[in-house]
Length: 318
Image 1 (cartoon, rainbow, N blue to C red):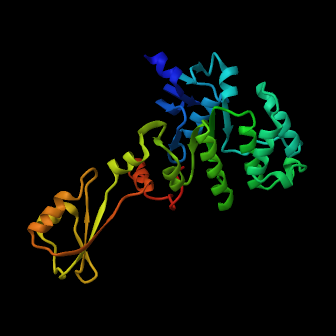
Image 2 (image 1 turned 180 degrees about the vertical axis):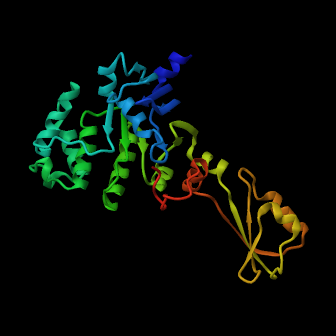
Image 3 (image 1 turned 135 degrees about the horizontal axis):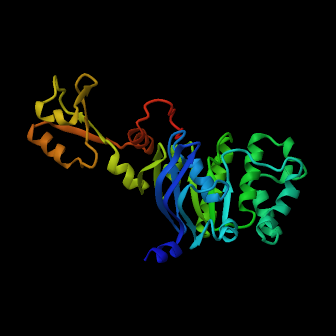
């Protein structure tokens, strides 16, 4: 059964460990990525995400455990697995003295793949590199270097694309264009593993999300199920008549009156629907004009799970 799961999955990670100078960076991490999905790996700085990505990519040795890509062990069958993977590292990695055009023509050959001019031109056009083909890497801006790295990672048509903070330091226009392109290649069959600073991107892009903290996996679930399971929804109720104080029976919902008692705020515990509290409100004789619900975002879930109450400015997950 385990052999079947490995063969039918894009990536299977089992009991992965890694330490640096005796300090654990990754502690017993296991997860499976299905073929064709967009999978998010999130966590604060030092959580072990980039170390995990680098072990998958084969640039960092495994401490222990195993990594299987499309049925091939990334240690024993590294020639196969590296050909199947495309990697955009968090750090800028470029060939300083080649032009953009030269580097892209050469790079597919590193994987034993013949250059495909039509595919190369498509990447150049979609990533906005056409005006910069004759420039050497040293002359590129940070955003253009990032675009080149994405093109380089895709040049050999990998089956699994690893994106480690691919939009760090790039402008909003490129971010939107990149995600549109990522969705397109995903629809065509490429599996995506994504880490990102931008939690709203993960929420919009990812089918499932794993969250790491202190080297361990602390959550792994379908994105919307994770948000629903761990979110604290808030009910906002507009009352026909103002309340002077909240009824004692509503205390479990942390009631709060605003707008001179005309609006009642109630917090629903994680996993609880609004039905029970609405029945209570009816039994109390409260007349309600309107109801609105606010559900937590992935960012709220992330902060709850990792214990971060600072350093997240609406976007950052590392």
